[in-house]
Image (cartoon, rainbow, N blue to C red; front, side):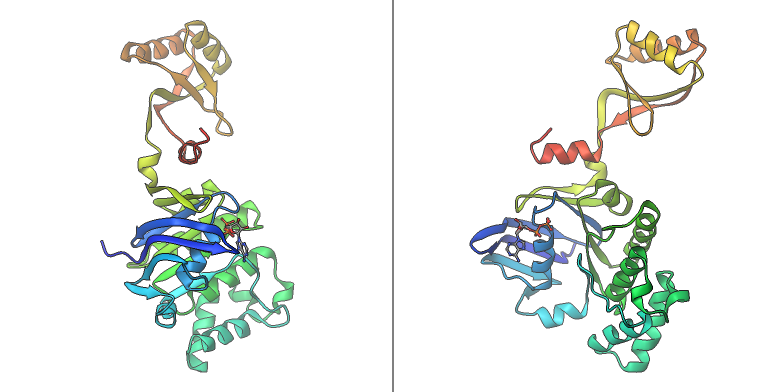
Length: 306
Ligand code: ADP
C-alpha cells in the first residue's frame, strides 16, 4: 500500500509545549477517522499535513513529498474543510466558490462551471444565488465542504465537519462525506470527537490523546466480539424474561438507547437455557447474536480510561 500521509516521529510545539509528540503513522486511501478529545492534537495533525505548522522534530511526507518544503505542489491535490467559518456573509455561494476556484488557479469560466457542479452536489443548487448571511449552519457547513472538493483533491482533510449541526444536518454531511470517500484513490481524513460520526463514515481510525497516537487500525478489529456476552431482544413478556434470566443466575443488563438486552452466558448450554427460559415466559426471541465491543469502549481503553 502506498502511503499518502507519512509521519515519522513528528513533534510539533506551540510556545514550547508539544501538541504532537513523536507521532509515527502511515495512512493510505479510504476514509480514516481522527478521533480524540478536545485538545488532543487533531487540528494540529491536520495543519501539519497542510504544512501550516512545522515539525520541530521528525519528518512529514504527503504523496511522497516532504512537507512543508513541497507545500505548494502538495496543496494542488489537497482539500481542507477547517473547523472555523470561512464564508463571506455578503456574497452568494456561487460567487464565493467561483472566487475559491480562481485561487486554485482555474480560469474564470471553469471556476464558475465547477462552482455550479459542486453546489448541486452538496444540495445547495436552489440557494446558490442567495447571500450566505441567509444560510443556516447546515448550509454553511455544506459550502465549506463544497470549497474543499472544488478542485477534485486526492486528499481531503475535514476538521470536525459536523460541528454545530442538528441530527438531520449531521447525517446529510456524513452521507456526502461517505459518498466522496468511495471515489477511487481518494483519502478522506475526518477529525471528530464524536464516535458515531467516525463510525458512520470510516473503516479505519487513528486515536489521538495528548499529542500521541494511542491506537490506529480497522474499526472492525476494534469492535471485536465480547466473549460470553450476547445481545438479545425478545417480544412479549420482556420484563418477565429479564426477571427469570436473572433469577436463573445470569447477568442481564439493558442497553441504551437501543433497549437491547446484554446477557452473559459463559457456556454453550447456557445459551440453550436462555431460549428455554424465553419459551417458559412466552417471550419470542427476535434477535440473538454475540455482542461486540463498542468503539467507545475501545476508545476509552486506548486512552487508558476503561
Ligand atoms: P484538537 O483539534 O484535538 O482539539 P488542537 O490540535 O487544536 O487539538 O490542540 C492541541 C493542543 O495544542 C491543545 O493543548 C491546544 O491548546 C494547543 N494549541 C493549539 N493551537 C495552538 C496555538 N495556536 N497556540 C498555542 N497552543 C495551541
